[in-house]
Length: 109
Image 1: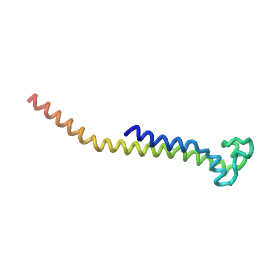
Image 2: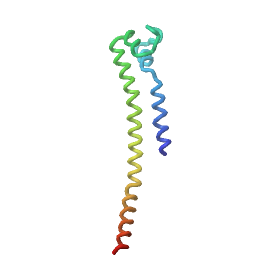
Image 3: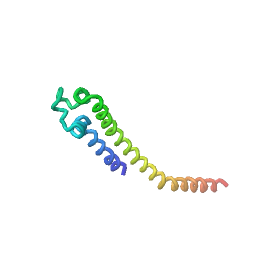
Image 4: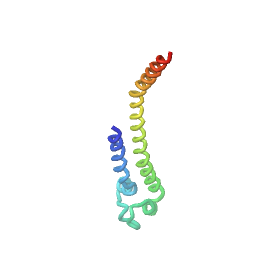
């Protein structure tokens, strides 16, 4: 189960990480390809030089979201998994600990 959760978290994180925020912002919002302007590099500096401050903040926002989203999703997924384990195993563990301690104490009396 743990390996499956790792894959469910890692694959979307990898796919989101491969999205270039500058290319996405230039094509969606400006209808231009950033690779055809300036140095041809689809990075943040070239985007800033070509489209200005508003575009710069847009690319930074895209990059922040694509970084935070998989982390939040993974945290939620693993917290749910941990809660599930504690819900299922916790009461059994408490019962077994109590049962064993009572049985051991009965042997001493």
